Amino acid sequence: MRKIISSILLLCFCALTVFSQKLYDLEHIPEIRITFEDQSWQLTLDSLKMAGTKERIPATVEIDGKKFTGVGVRYKGNSSYKNPRSKDQIKLPFNLKADYTDKDQRFPGGYETIKLSNVFQDPSFLREVLSYEIARKYMPASRCNFAKVYVNGVYLGLFNNTQAVDEHFLEEAYGTHKNAFFKCDPEWEEVKDLENDCPEGDKASLMYLGDDPECYLGWYEQESKKDEDWQELIHLTKILNQQPEKIDSFLNVDMTLWMHAFNNVLVNLDSYTGRLSHNYYLYKTPDGLFTPIVWDMNISFGGFRYDGEKQGVLTDEEMQTYSMFAHYKNKNPKRPLIVNLLSNPLWRKIYVGHCRTIVLENFANGEYLKLAEKVRKIIGEEVKNDPNKLYTYADFQKNLSKSVEIGYSTSIGIEELMKARTEYLLKHPLFNGKNPVITKPKHMVNGSKVSITASVKDAEKTYLVYRYSLDEPFKMMEMFDDGAHGDGAAADGLWGLSIEKKEGFQYYLVAEGDRLAVCSPERASYEFYEVK
Image (cartoon, rainbow, N blue to C red; front, side, top):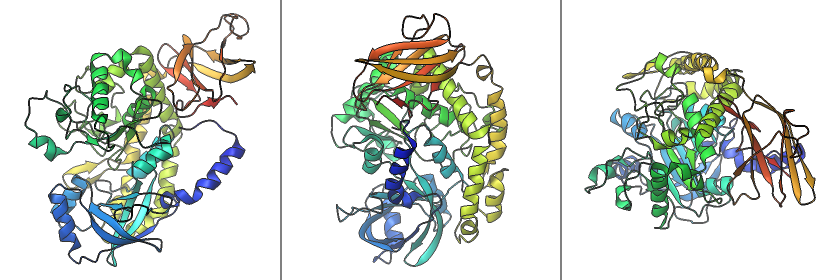
């Protein structure tokens, strides 16, 4: 989690992390050379992939000239592997594991795993990087750049290089990797082979399927090691579906609302939101709450046109005007993580506020286009020289702004989608009322108490959301504008609350209006204030 810290501390932090981030530095294109002793490596990797196993074969890997031996290599992905392979294309996605034979070996920066994607279904080459750059403003998410990949001396082309969501990621984001951890990405063959009397589920949508872990196999993949972790996941689904009013004791609701807002604004339907309800992880963080982690962005920005509500594909206009309340407005029982969270009036307003923040900070101001052009300058020549790219260089040049045909489908232009979508959302009635405004948030320590005050306009209620440690969940208390809580005179727009001070006090504010809620800092709870 991030916090608001001084510029001096931030500079020190950045200096310490520059080296570890180089593998994923956006402006650096690492050169990755994979060398197999097995000259029939393609056949071997294909056989392992088609058998449905995650077994690997050893290889020597060089990253920018630094050599790593005994690295485990396998193909990864589903459609990104199967579709190109069916056309005899050789640019296939790889998963490299540093500690395959040497348990202490790590890639530069301490990373255990490297995931190389072949930019399938994205002729723009931009979707994965842009999406992660935006996501990391609001939630823990992978770093992502590009890499030039060679195998046995043959240049395969330019790949997306995306940080794995693994033990290293969890340690970096949450300080520990030892808690319950699940990949929510159905293993379709495993699901198909199940023969039992389980209730009918719908992918990794967190529907409650009873208390038997067998009913969840295939829909979810356990990444942690304790058998009892399955019971924790099952209990989460049970509370979400049967007692949703208690879900904030088991789920990080705010991070989930940020995920929903991100998926919705970017029309990232190859996610929990869309028809396949997948491509995210769940990790139980030190505060005892499960939190979602987004994954797999190659067909974000409208690259996947199936939302699970409409039969068939969404048109360009339907994606441009995609409802903020998809699934919720129809009370879709197969999407309880959306329906049951947005049924809470305050959480629904916070979600709308998060959507508005993402729109204003990335799209209304054109920041996404500036970032896109920056990336295009970095990779333009490399895309042009990629001998095995799945789409043409002309498609790459065009797809940022306009649609291109890719096989049997159309990849909408990113700007074509987001310009119209931004205009649609900015005109949304929920964005255009008397939205609350929070200014001058401050705190003052008085002995064993800390007084929090802020000037707030057009709010029905204002809340202090606080905790004393990263190991406990945020708690919410209502603030007052009555002149009796260190807030000046009654009804003067200065809201306040005094609360017990403890070491590690962290907080943010929420102002609830009649249509949406705003936070201070705006990116809370990912960013917050701290009382020193």
